[in-house]
Image (tube, rainbow, N blue to C red; front, side, top):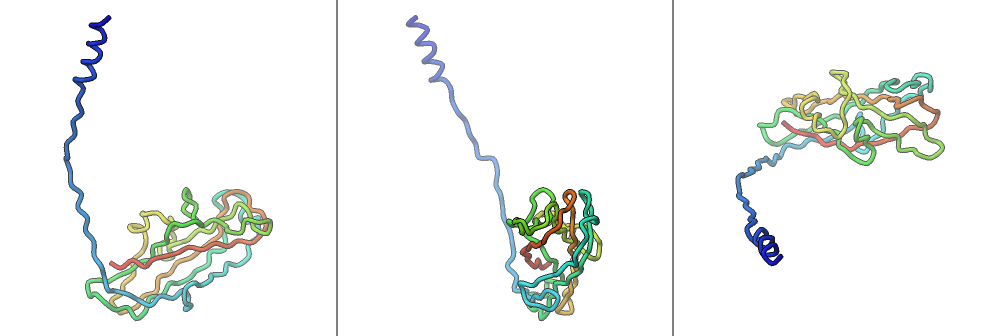
Length: 181
């Protein structure tokens, strides 16, 4: 019995842990002085885009869309680095964003709000849905030329059904950042 205890104790004493440092991560970035005045349909931020009312029958099944409404983000008086030649809006993740569908949730959650309805942002030149908050926007969004010192970035928003819609009000919001390239 005594030799068994010694054998067990010896086993714990022989165990060793090895670790090695095997890598390096380098980070790079750039601070730009390129800035533009930003308006939405000629209005200062925050601005409101009003969608036309829609009959619930147009949003009767998941994936139905209706009443696409265009809006423009305008960049003007752009100044700064000559190396920056284009820009795009990046629509940010936040509390109003559905993390699975990348659409905007209806923020009216009381009895006056419509249910089974979200708002979907659209890249107007391509007609493609924008995945709000997704890093995919960096490669899938249209970029706009800034060589003239200004640019108009056309987008749209539409109702999107997540099921059979019920009548009520719809509202949401999203923050955006202008990315310069």
